[in-house]
Length: 172
Ligand SMILES: Nc1ncnc2c1ncn2[C@@H]1O[C@H](COP(=O)(O)OP(=O)(O)OP(=O)(O)O)[C@@H](O)[C@H]1O
Ligand SMILES: [Mg+2]
Image 1 (cartoon, protein in one colour):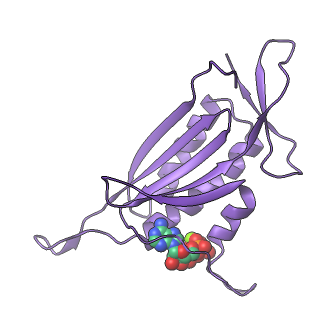
Image 2 (image 1 turned 180 degrees about the vertical axis):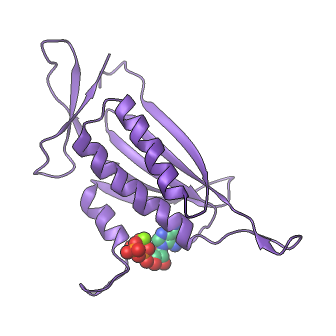
């Protein structure tokens, strides 16, 4: 991305229900395609979207409304952010408890999500939000500037994993 190019960002709010993952993935797929993110990079980003949204739905506590005795379907937010430093996938939920990778045995059925995220991205973490009450869990896929192509398009190649050979192409 050129120095004077604006970062690209998107936000999608979804109810913290089982359909959140499908909605979030669909939204992210559309946005990453619109931004010209290469398929292999988008593939990794979509896996991360799935894991972080699943966690927000499954583990984040739902606010309880004593008026109707039913949990309020809280809102999660999926944020995508593409800058010259990388593609960041973030999920906000209203629970302040942090994500904690589990030491799951290799044959365990659960406890793999954050390990998968860790393997796919350059860095991940969480930050408590303010004034909103919850937290933002984020994962960054690295991209690095490559030479301009003869057509004048700038390309950003994924550098999240040494073996990655795919790229992100930003149209001017
Ligand atoms: N958004 C979140 N809010 C609160 N706690 C979380 C959140 N995300 C993860 N955690 C905690 O971190 C633990 C590890 O998450 P991880 O995604 O690795 O495993 P899992 O969700 O338990 O299982 P799997 O992802 O394999 O279905 C969870 O069991 C949960 O205790
Ligand atoms: Mg999980």
